[in-house]
Amino acid sequence: MLDTIEIHRFSLLDEALQTYERRFGALPEWLDELSSGRALALLRQALGRGAPLNAADVLI
Image (cartoon, rainbow, N blue to C red):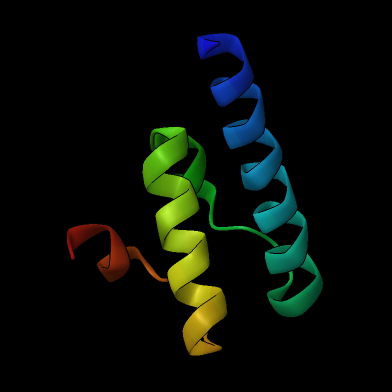
C-alpha cells in the first residue's frame, strides 16, 4: 500500500512540474534540492497564486 501512495504522490508532482513549466517556463534550479512533498506544495502555491516561484518562497 505504501508503494501505491508514493507512486500517486510522484505522479501529482510530475503533473505539477509540467503545468508549472507550461505556465511560467523553466523551473527554479533550487527546486530539485527539496523533498517531493515540499516541492509539490510550493508548485501548488505558485500555480494557485498565478506567479512563478522565487527563492523567498522556500523560507515561508
